[in-house]
Image 1 (cartoon, rainbow, N blue to C red):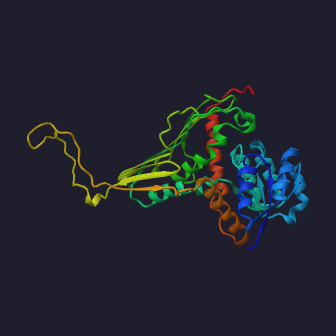
Image 2: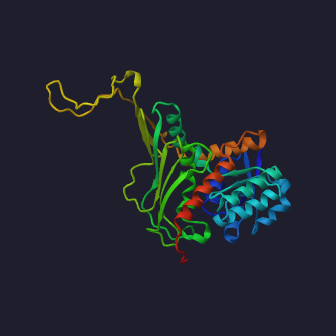
Image 3: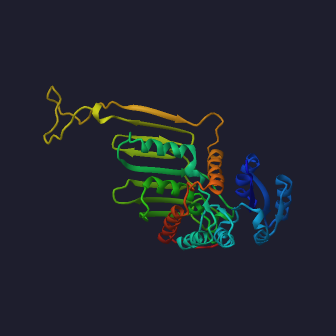
Length: 356
């Protein structure tokens, strides 16, 4: 099996604990040859853990291009765009961490650079490949729930935060940090490729920084379901992650379990519109109700199964097959450019004062 040589830019939580850990567990297909980080202690640790060569600045990779199959850009959020753009112009295949960009204009510039150089541009939106989200899509696509009326997604909990990811100037805040995952899922379920109609309310609640940590985002398009997304750091009683409402049933779920119920219209009691008041056989006033032939099913993550790890595995399987055999990317850059356009619009609708 051919092994792909990898360079990782950044050895923070993402570059080391997500991408790096995956490559350590997938040594048949990937080998970390180079690591870039500004901190000496992180470079020294990378040399020991990966047995790789390290650099302080990403430009040092330019002389190693013939020895690198893919670069993972896990730098600070505000550096994703300039570093990815520079790498693409040099012809490097790039996996870019989220947020993909600060603005749709930046996203389009990177896409254009990828097309001109022929280099791969792969946004790291692995949650679209997570088993729990695949199950949501499978149930919806089965048609059992009927026409989808509304989709609620909540990535919520109660947590205070005080790191660099709370500062607006760092392209941070909950919408740029957590948001790319649920916004990507929301747009996938909404369908279409247009920028949807948007209502958004953002707030600063428990954070120590000047960026938002509460977002309510509602999106819709003609003939599409309403999608209601909440990202909150001030929800002490989260109700779950997904709630899908359809004309024939619905689904409720979390990242580890899901249940859905539906009925077959052919087996349901035959009804017709009645304009006069309803009565019981005894002549008493009656409430409009019926017993539907509900069917139910459920899904639970396998014992010991880590959905996050599984999503990363699925993502890099796709990257490996794309580079070696041309398999289409399961997450296309133009799809993520749409996501960035939505995120940017939310910020335009909710300007927050800066104090950091």
